[in-house]
Length: 148
Image (cartoon, rainbow, N blue to C red; front, side, top):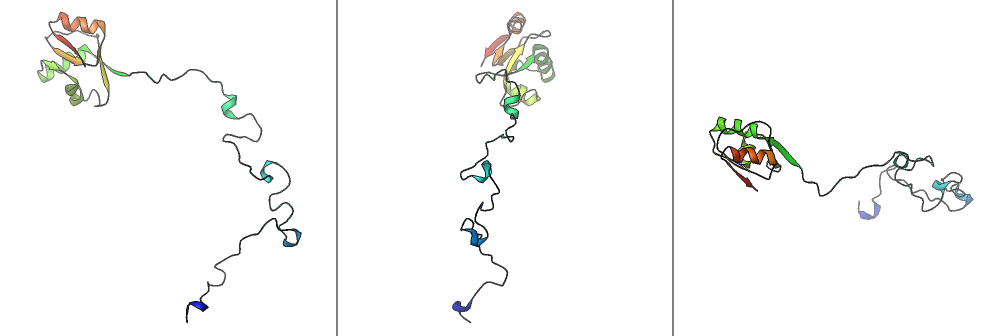
């Protein structure tokens, strides 16, 4: 036995179908593509969302609104929450790290302090943004506001 008499096992290989080689081949004429229509033509490719000529969904559904790519989203935290956190942990400075530790925000979120509730102790609060009422309440209690 040598390399010259090696051949594949019977039935393991097939000859490829040679279409469009005349009527004698049995695969001439329409070349297995059926009769007429876009799919029988060369270079045919169906558009994404094509529904056989019916008005496609993306053209039937009305369009409205837009998404502002410059929008900055803040996680809102009220001063009553800040006060509760400060009394529970006995803090004088409340920052982003404290809020992450307490589980109010994730490390990627921006924080805005809002003015719901009351603040009784003198606190130094640092956040990315403050509402006017929150800032006024913190300052009125003798605390300070640090914008990051």
